[in-house]
Every structure is written in C-alpha cells, then in structure tokens.
Length: 75
Image (cartoon, rainbow, N blue to C red; front, side):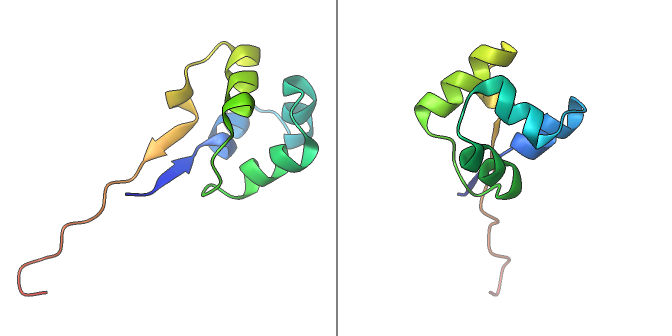
C-alpha cells in the first residue's frame, strides 16, 4: 500500500511558491523541492516536525495512504 506526500497540494492550496515554503520551514532547499515534485518521497521525521510546527497542522494533512486495488474475479 503506497503512501504519498501531499506537499504539492498543501503548498498550492495556500497560494505559496516552493521557494516560500522552503524559506518559511527552514528545511533544506533540495528537500523542499524534492517533496514538492515527487509525491513518492516521504518527509523525514525532523522535516515533518518543521513543517507541522511552522503551519500548526497535523501530519495527516501532508500524507495520504493509497490502498491497493483488489484483483477482480478471474484475474
């Protein structure tokens, strides 16, 4: 069951640029851009803490779980 980050959704919904997100959170520039551009990348614990603390949000805002699809009968 894959997990995906929702950083792009979060940043875009707030009308921010990735640059602004990077500056406001204090995480590394590479990490900020990688999280924004690659939803399969998971934020490290310290990165998650920095983002949640800065925006006063819960981690579930930043992550989503995608359940595996059940195979159809006959497959």
